[in-house]
Amino acid sequence: MLLRRLMRTIGFAVLSLLAREPLSGYDLASQLRERVGTFFYAGHSHVYPELSRLEKAGLVVHERVEQRDRPTKKLFRITPAGREAVREWVTGPLDPALPFRDELTLRAFSIWLAERTAALAFFGDQERVHRERLTRYEAIRAQIDSHWPTEGRRWDMPDFASYAALERGIRYERELTEWCAWMQAQIGA
Amino acid sequence: MLLRRLMRTIGFAVLSLLAREPLSGYDLASQLRERVGTFFYAGHSHVYPELSRLEKAGLVVHERVEQRDRPTKKLFRITPAGREAVREWVTGPLDPALPFRDELTLRAFSIWLAERTAALAFFGDQERVHRERLTRYEAIRAQIDSHWPTEGRRWDMPDFASYAALERGIRYERELTEWCAWMQAQIGA
DNA sequence: TCTCACATGTAACTAGTTACATGATTGC
DNA sequence: GCAATCATGTAACTAGTTACATGTGAGA
Image 1: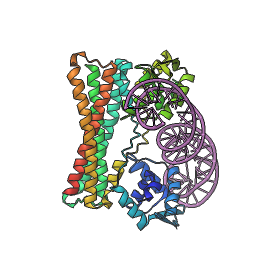
Image 2: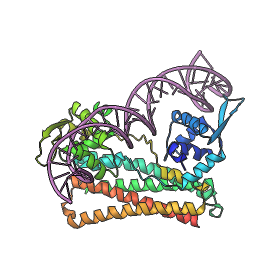
Image 3: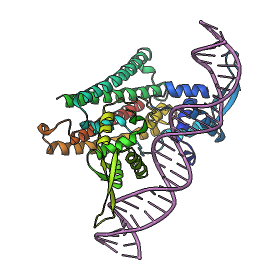
């Protein structure tokens, strides 16, 4: 579809959230920070202009919602065209263009310049950081597992998709934790 | 050091390579594409301005080198100050600011919208892509292992640092490959 | 002659972050 | 009155990519 050219990944991130429930720009930004922030972050100043773009493209619409206890908000809702756009994108070709930048690996690439104690401390710190995240994610998964019977799980449910992203996070952090430990073993030997 | 504020990670990427050997802007860009490109990419149009910046900061110097068979080049060399800057950076605090954007995980987060066959094909393709990379990296490591005796390895050698980055790449690609397989198992079940 | 690798740069554009700017309502 | 949360946006800046622009020398 031609649309793909006009869309940036941030647009699909917004649509991904709106496909689950209507949200205000504020809530969208909050979820982009907290819910999906570990794998796809965007600030609120990025969200508002993007919502305008999406609305112009007919992929979302908004309505003003007056609230008694809080300021009036704009509630954004995905349109059928928007839903179709996500559907096409989600299994469409993934640009293998990896302007990938991993500073941690870059540091490993230059670790030969460091002093042993500094190098050990660095990878020790990194191991702790990633082990903490790992532990946190695993706790969330354990929580889900204990409340969500395996039989009730279907891959085409939004909750499973969230679970799959969490699973990816766990594997990613575990891999990092183990590599940091490996680095220390190599340096310490 | 105050210098850290003036430096961007791309600057350290350049210095990381120059700490190993003097290079021209062209060679620098080539290595940034081929050698460290898998974990830290930058195009040549980014390298040249960065070299100017680094030279102004006194972290690199250059000399013209006339070649008979090829166009004259500028050979860049790291200065003692530059080497010291890398040394400080390499084990210094790593900004945990992760404006991390992983489109693959974002897609998993919206996979519930897809059709089963499209979802299976998508993660099958991704698994193939990452398994290919994994195989390629493992072949390189096997090559190194067969020529480089374990006793001769020291963590403070540039070659070990390259090996460590490769190890990280292998673990990263393996993790991704396995997760893609897991996704297919979940969808197919 | 033409293409490829080597070699260096700038310009224009796109993307993204941080800072700026404003305002309502609630609870302390 | 003041801080915090909810709420929406713009402006200025930083970073990064793609396209533009030029030129040498080797080999087919």
